[in-house]
Length: 265
Ligand SMILES: C[S@@+](CC[C@H](N)C(=O)[O-])C[C@H]1O[C@@H](n2cnc3c(N)ncnc32)[C@H](O)[C@@H]1O
Image (tube, rainbow, N blue to C red; front, side):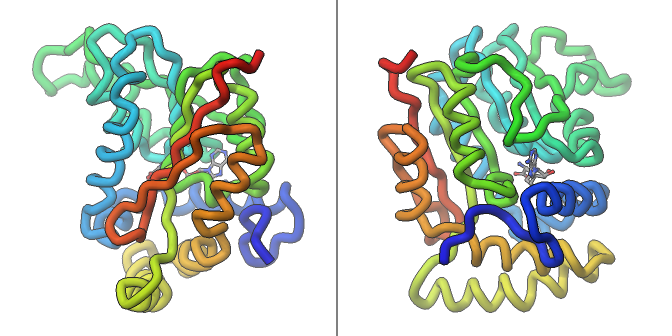
């Protein structure tokens, strides 16, 4: 049976699952960036940049209202900011883990462009506003966003259908959604990757991160996440159109893209 949402071990309902995920990210926040880059051999940087480029047109509009939800320590947010024009409306960068968000804000917040010792402050440089927010209960007005993006966070939501419904509600008609997520490739690459993901990654994660739980949860959560055809069907079910999946790096990850129909009110 396909998972309806993330369920870390020992959690039985959505509220407990959400809380367990939040606590897990609060706990690994100090080592998150290091672990991420080591475990992905820095390929994640290419993925964030490639995903951001897919939304170049909307990012170039200074007034566009953009949300990076589950922004964590802010690497996708930074890739998005590179494509924002000077003086553009700040990106909203939301996450429900305060510890992850605090680290992100050091990179993308307004203070980051004014840091002492970093040369002349670039006051016109685009920045992002950190927002403590739950993806399933977003605090902004319905129909207010031009673009919602999320990287490696959607898989952690306690209810995928509710997440898609919330994104649909908050987007303007014609607004776009991008979800960057891991997936499980088939064939030989899939076999090699499964070995790495299920054996090597938890061991290295435990070694560097000092904790067992999160890096066992990671492969388990990818294994339980809907495959691209099911995910695309869920997106259509939520009322989205032009749903597509673009595999990255042999399908280890991929970008889901879709749009809220322009004619809706
Ligand atoms: C694997 S990290 C990804 C962070 C970042 N986007 C990246 O690409 O590195 C997942 C993030 O999703 C956040 N998250 C998970 N469920 C969430 C929810 N319901 N609402 C807000 N943030 C959530 C976690 O706190 C965590 O920071």
